[in-house]
Length: 433
Image (cartoon, rainbow, N blue to C red; front, top):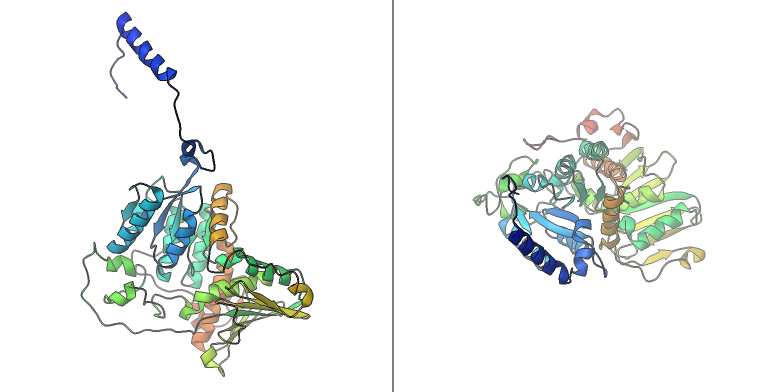
């Protein structure tokens, strides 16, 4: 807009201006339905603008589901790898039908953008918590892949930050919105199995490595930013295998000796089935006589037991859970199939399932709906806090090879200084949160 003083328009100029204006209004203006939000389209002003941090593997699965949502527009991606930045940008631009997806190496630059409403965080475990916290403090809503926090203390800080900032948070524990798991939980909570006595959560083979892979020449920062890849984790020499995804099992990068890889899903479902989203088991005891199966027994204050185990499942797919009551049991997994010992329960099992357990279709939709309504998501930060802490407590008991007791209110181990020291880890500067 000009700052100069307005000039007087003469008669001839006035007539020219009026004629031009009349010509404009005489010709019908065609506005695309997409712009008006008609015919199934969502107007650009109503779209949720999303940025992604560390989109690879699992992150690509979630992003694919986000693209199916008509009210989402993905506008920027950040990755420490140049090839990954380029790959995701190419995909996003193809989906959006333009070349406007921006790329960043440092996620803090992405978070500075005022036009981004929410972020998808799908980095390695070490970054989930700090990136989510910084995103919330930057005013963004967060969908974070799990495990959402690498320690008990970070789980607490994450939930506290979401509450303080008023941001919407969705943990990537999508089985909370997958029909066969939801139905199994409903059966348990409604008493169709009788009074619940035991819950079973599947876990990986546990592993806790402290060695280093052989050092390799560190690449140029623009190709792979190794310092940013490490983030809050302790420094160690570069090895391409870490960056390619072979970081799992290493203590500095992983969550709870890999227990949370599945346990973040399965123990979370057990918590829900036990109506225990606001509490924790009070005891955790590794079964040292069956070390190859990594069995850990937990017990709630109401007497219900939770069994974290690798084997003995019915073959219903990955991430199986089993709920047992005084009158029978129900078991389900990622194939969508469900098996039960009770005829009346069997008759009510929905067939076929609407999606498999690894697909976050409804979880993504729940997140975007809550971004708009500001309601709590299915896997909100408070739910995530308790189930993650329970998983971490079980992992610490396994690492220490002894029974631990925990106060669900203080989220502290009782009379065990060594276990309480393991509730947190030091973070490398400047990534302390």
